[in-house]
Structures are given as structure tokens and as C-alpha cells.
Length: 271
Length: 302
Image 1: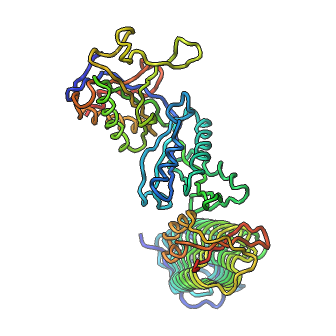
Image 2 (image 1 turned 30 degrees about the vertical axis):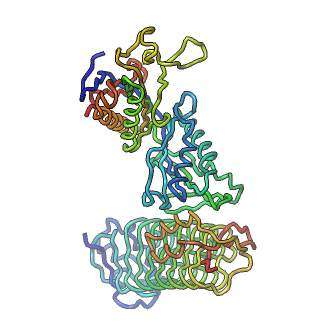
């Protein structure tokens, strides 16, 4: 069956909330019903039909064409099926996702994958700040699933992450993995200052140079661990670059000793 | 006893009587095949019979680098017990004492399924608070710091309640050396069958037992009807030309696995013929009243 296609007519005048456009909420709806769904975030009413040209098809295989950074919360609460976005997206893409696949061919705004608990997000461009992180007032960020960013990521990727895996193939901003509770964060290239800042548990792997490591991560020596082989095997399904970063001998730094200190930061062992 | 003849070997028209058991499987890996095998050999030692060992356990198969979760050489071990509680206890103590302690080892689930037994979930406390859980998709692992690095152990492994224990073949020869050689050929054939093990030493039991004894405290005693040195003194089942008897006991994760193992063993022994192997093949049963699984030899002939 052909996918359900939504083509953006033009850049919208206001930010649009696309959270109603997920397969399980669209299941069984006729095209006319979908076109009547409201997406506005201001007093000005905007429906799907106003903003998009709709080509009816299987809602489990959605495609959003001509997307721009004003489209927020794409794939929010996705349970299953697939959403493919051609173009950039706004904030909170894939927020609270529980399953399925969200692929963004452009850049994503802040809080992509926020509070996600399952499924897979692939961002081919750049990701904004606080990838997978909690919104203000929330205590936990990403709780499961897999995120791959082919480009760079902003500050605090993996903030308060509790489970799952984030792989960033490009550069990462400052404080990556800040306040991590658990989970795995693989940063393939350069990263900003203080990765793992105040992390209590979890695993961060640095493939490239780091602007400044926190002094509260004592050196635990260089090791080739079986657990890293398992992580590499898992990562290989999503990113060959991430798998290669995890493979081989790595230096283990334990921390953040400023808090619980049961997390770990692996860096390339060039010595 | 009525008999069939296959390639000159007499095959009793009887059946092996087997029992339902609880079983699990684990995969042990190490830096080399030698050390994976060492950990498995240590763990499966003293695991021949539930009568005295608590469980029946042996290596099912050796696994190549590409077949294990961490891409290191490994072996798959099966464990069988009479209850879930005993199986859990045996799994836990054997992995803790024999695999956790073995250099470079790691341990994973060797059986999928809805019912689970604790593996790493029971052993993680050895980490004294330094153990780390790592969830990768549906699988959860424990990383326990040890003196040569980390012991990685999957949190749980599968449990099957459809396992079968006590499938057997009785090989009767007219000379001890050839009987043993035939038994070894049978065990080698069974090793190629997945999901089935032969838990006795080298896969072979020479002291087959019967239920009960003249002594009050012994639940089982020597199977005098199959002892060649008692042929004239007791009601023996042995023919005059039989001088040695060896038994192969087979446990499998399913009735089909036991049947496949018995079929492979019979085919291998029959192929040898009476001059290179044994002159007669039989099977042990209790009249069919105790065990729900009956494996008739005539159905398993090549």
C-alpha cells in the first residue's frame, strides 16, 4: 500500500504542533477527517488541510514532504509504524516515542527524542540541544530506544538519560550526558567541555577529542572489555562509525565523583 | 524378547521410557575455545544424574566466533532437573563457582522463552555494589568487576517445562573394547544433534541401575539383569554371546530432540555392524507405567 503523504504547502506563519499526526491516532480516519485536524499553536486556526496537501495512503507509512523547522512534535508518542520526514523539523521531534521509526532527513530542533522510551529515531542532519533530555519539571529524559544523529548535536545531549542508546556521528556540544542516570551515549567525533557532567551511572564513549574533561573522573586504566563488544555489536546495526568507536582498547574514567560516581567515560587509548 | 535385525545387529523390540524434566541452556564464552570449554567442563562436572548430583548437565555444542553474542568462541551447556527450584539452584551455584571464576569468561542465555530463570540477576551481588546493568534492546546484562576485568552475564535465561530426561540406549557387545568403541561412536553421533546431551562420563554409563535395592537406604542399585558376570546367577536379559553392556542416557529439550539423538546413535551403531561394534541394542524401561515418553526402537531404526 502507498504511504500517507503530507506535503507542506508553504512555510507556515506560526509554529505548528504535529503531535496528532501519528499512525495510531490516524488509523481508520478518512482523508477528509485527517484534513480537519487542528495543528495551530496560536489563536489563528490551522488545519492539516490548510498546511498540507494530502495524498491518502497507509498511515503506518507516513511521509512528510517539504518540512521546515516550524513543525514541532513530529512523531510524538509514536507507537509503531514509520514516519519519514523530508526536510528540517522543529522542537521535540519523537518526544515520548514508544516504538516505530522516525527518520528525519534534515535537521532537528531542541529536545528531539525527549522522554522517548522505545523505537528508533534517525536524524540525518544536525540535532539541537538536549537531545533525549527532559522538559523543565521532568526528572528523567530518554528511557529507552535508539537514536542516531548522522550530523552534529547541540549541548547536553542525553541529559538525564536513563536507558537506551544515543549515537552521534558528528561533533557534540558541551555537557553531553549531563546528569545521566544510566544508558549509553556514543560521541563519535569532537565533543565540548565536561561530558558526563554530574552523571551518576551510565556509559559515555568519546571517539574524538574533548575540549575539557571534568577533573572528577579518575582514571581506571585501559581495558578491552567484553561489555564493549556487546555494545559495539548492538551499535553496528545502526551506525558503523559508532561501532568502530566502541571497539578495541579504551581508557575507562569513572565518575562523576562529584555525585554518585558509578558512571563511566571511555576515551580512546592513544598511549 | 522379540528382536529385529539391522545390518546384522539385533535390536530389541522395546522402548526407552523417559520422564518430563525442567531444563535450561546457557552459552559460555571466553578469550579462546580452550577456556570456554574449560569453564563448561568445570560447570558440568558431577552432573551425571539427578539421583545424586541435583541435575544432569553437559555441553550441547561448541559455538564458533560468529555464533556467540560477544563474537568470541563459546559452548552451549544444557541443564536438566526435576523441579524449577532445583534447576535454579543448580544453575546459580554452578555458574557462580565454575564460570564466574574461570578466566575471561562470560555467560549468556542459551534458550529463549517466556519462562525465565535468574542468571546474572542472581550473581550480580558478587559485585558488591560495583556491578553495572546494561540494557541493549530486549537483553539485559550484568557487568561484575572481577580481577581480570569484568564478568559479563545476561540477566536471565530461558526455562522449558517440555524437556525430557532418561532417553536411553543399551549397547550389548561380545567384547568390552568393541562395546566401548561402539558407544563412543554413538555419543559422537548424538553430539551433532542440537538440544540433546549425554550427561554421563564421556556420554557413557557403565553402571546402569534399577529402581530399589535389598538395602533399605539405597533408592537404586546395580541393574543385575544386565551384568554379564551375573548371567548365570540371576534372571538375566543377556544372551550367551554378550560380555559387556554400556548405556547411553539422553536428555533433550524436547521429545523430538531425544528421538533425533536416539535415531542418530542407533544409525551410527548399526552402521558399524556386529563385528566392528555391538551385537545387540536394547533400551531401558519400567514397563511403561512411570514415564510418559516412550521411544520405541523399531520407530528409530535407520
